[in-house]
Picture 1 (spheres, rainbow, N blue to C red):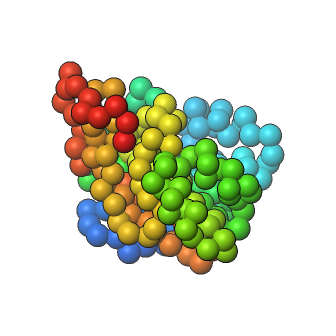
Picture 2 (cartoon, rainbow, N blue to C red; picture 1 turned 90 degrees about the horizontal axis):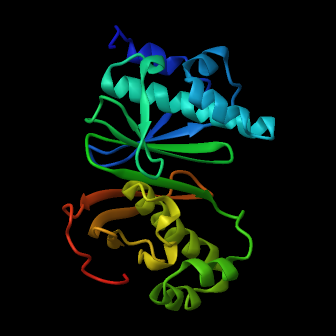
Length: 248
């Protein structure tokens, strides 16, 4: 049920105001800091499912970050669709990808890591975003062998050692963004998704059970010391369409 809603007033009540990042419309990207205090207003915005998920965190720090991220997401979505953030209702796709119920005109994706979060909003279609901190990834070499395609490994191995974490995280964030846009989670192995290890924007094709999906993915540097990627789904195969390639 829609209620009168003052979007600017809602944004001002956030513990840390969101920062809008450059992005071509209709895509909107917002950075959220999760380092501020969580207010009673933040907690009150969450529904029962979100509160239950927050309660499952072992560490209070992680619980507070979750609350701040999801309260921030609700406020941004409420502003976008003109609905009181507390009144927004979510539902899940087959693999748990969240979406707004009764609001098909607003696709979104949330990623948070440490004290930072990114929210991607789009008018329609499917979107995914992923965020990672540089300097926090261990065993880059082992992860690369496990997660990269053979072509990506060639590029990774040719990268100077001091730049390999950045190269790996470029690929990893793009893979995660693509899989989040598809709503498949890790049902698709990241090592089968070719996104490259350089900074160039990519058109990515992913083999799904119903056929090949095509996505546009770009790497972002939302703030110093961080790397991110956002993916938008361009082509989803029609129901019953045969897969074009066994692997990609």
